[in-house]
Image (tube, rainbow, N blue to C red; front, side, top):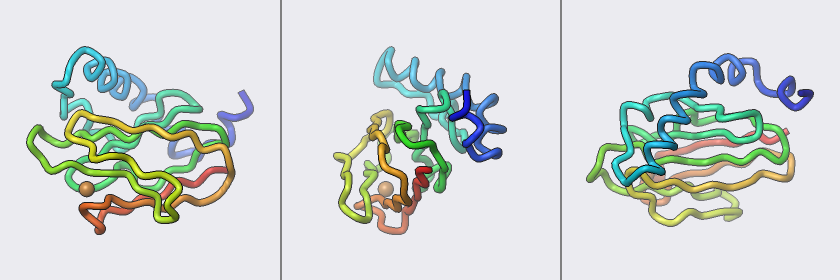
Length: 134
Ligand SMILES: [Cu+2]
């Protein structure tokens, strides 16, 4: 698994713990609209080496900076409590722009070209994140 070795060591470290938490978040979402915020209180969930979860929680992206291999998919999940204002994930360079994501909703994008991809939340410009694809 050569692509796994390219991952940031910190990400790899978090991966083991985050794996089942991320899976729980996803399966719960699949079962109904009541996403469990407790399951979402994880900095980053590495579902596998090519699919990474970024949780949106407390008006911030967790983790706000991630490093992924070329071809990986990033899924942002709004893990705020029900009733919280929606968020977006919006590329600073207008490469992608999610619709408003209510708590429990998610948005995915594949990153097929190496580079640095800063993004923000449109309703809350103080919310910033960065995807490093290498
Ligand atoms: Cu926001």
